Image 1 (cartoon, rainbow, N blue to C red):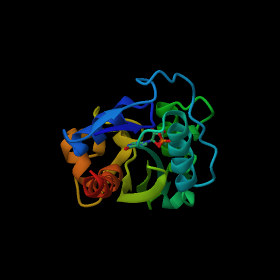
Image 2 (image 1 turned 60 degrees about the horizontal axis):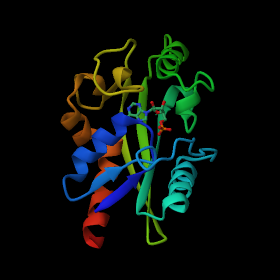
Image 3 (image 1 turned 180 degrees about the horizontal axis):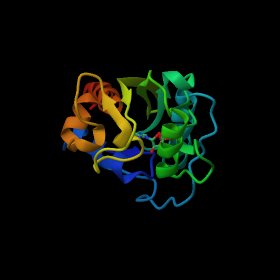
Length: 192
Ligand code: IMP
């Protein structure tokens, strides 16, 4: 079954394809010839995930899903949250975003945080939402070179390494997106 993943992030595609396995072939808007931006103007992760999935479903009419992810830092009252991609400015610069989190947490003793991922799926016009959460904490400096985004400063609870120090398989077992995708896979298997 071919399914569109409404993202331009190759890291996300690789993570999700690994979990979906061979029964589902991911394609992206870019591979289908759409080079423009996908709107993302919602006030919540759910609104954004739905907005992206609806936009791509309207373009292609194919089964599709979109994810929206936020890093919620307790000492920053849940920021960057839904603004995670643009925390340090509209340029969506992952390195600048990560540095701003570290700067805003400078000296903080409570460093607990979580990644929250919402996936919106649309098949035959029916919409479903799935959510996954990974609890952890923000280190004082980056560690590791795998993964992407805030991974080098996020250490999942009960583990000694950051997501950026883990293989894709390890991260998928523990991560917010991995948990949400497992729910997505259950739904897709029922329908396939
Ligand atoms: P979005 O879901 O693509 O809008 O991502 C929001 C922000 O969170 C971006 O800055 C991403 O780089 C970051 N992000 C999304 N997923 C992850 C992840 O699994 N690990 C680390 N950062 C992530």
